[in-house]
Image 1 (tube, one colour):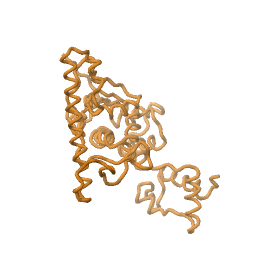
Image 2 (tube, one colour; image 1 turned 30 degrees about the vertical axis):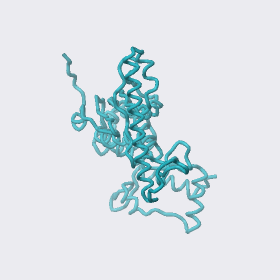
Image 3 (tube, rainbow, N blue to C red; image 1 turned 45 degrees about the vertical axis):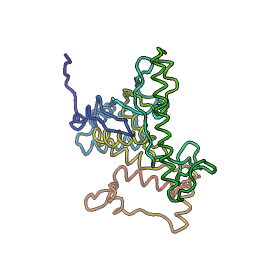
Image 4 (cartoon, helix red, strand yellow; image 1 turned 45 degrees about the horizontal axis):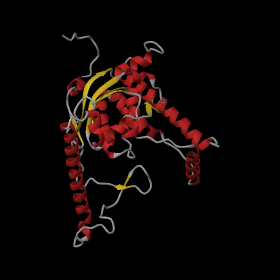
Amino acid sequence: MVSQTNRDTVPAMEELIGQKFPVLSDGFVYVVDYMGSDAAVVQMARTSYGAGTKTVNEDRGLIRYLMRHKHTTPFEGCELKLHIRLPMDAMRQWIRHRTANVNEYSTRYSIAIDSKDKTASDGWRLQSELNKQGSGDGALAFPNGFNFPGYLADDRRHEVAGDYLSSRETALHDFAKEIYEERLAFGVAREQARKDLPLSTYTECYWKIDLHNLLHFLSLRMDSHAQKEIRDYATIIGEQIVAKWVPLVWEAFQDYRLNSITLSGPEMKIVRDSVLAIGGFGVSGETMQKYGVAKVVDGNIKPTREGEELTAKLRKMFVEDPS
């Protein structure tokens, strides 16, 4: 019998426990368990200076301050445990994030999962010409000299090339399965029989990580430069799970990490010179109020703490010499 303890719960997360989110052709993500909430982040932060703020609005401001100034330990007080099913090639990227606790399905002890990630005929991507590790844009076509019926119209070459590659993928999967099962029938040890399984073979793992390191994972794997397959998983974890678990943290993460940019020293100088060349800079109080970094106090528009920080950044960029 499992005893129950008193702890803060998030109703939206309680509803998610055990719910599978499908990913790719046969993968999934679901919540096994979680600890903490937005309130836990605030609680961790307040240990530094006592009771501190009290209202939800002040909690939101504190969380945004922590995220904006890259404080990390308050976010480490929350944890998430997921059950994930994903192709082995995506797992090889996933495991590079070493700040989590992982236990993966073992093909030494168990027979390999009988499922391979399949690519739709329109899902094949070209190699990027600019990025050695990424995909590029453009139409797929048969390589020059490829022995394929030449009567195809040019406007069908992309469509048929995708069909061809997907059919060859299926043939490879079928052959790999046949060889693997044949070895098992001969009595070959599972740890050796598995050695020629393709990286498209699905594996499963339990993945437990604290919120700070989870946000770092999401900032990298939700980025447009991440491989699409792992980006699909990260997007579901972020938008379907984290956003419901810690909505105030998620809002701050989007504003200060996911949808923000960092300028280098040379980039700041370029922006400074370009703006000053067309007549200087200036941000009105109304504009700052519109985007939530100023408010009306006694009939006057006053910057919030974030607004004051923005003003300091603008002064550094346009008034002070950044050299």
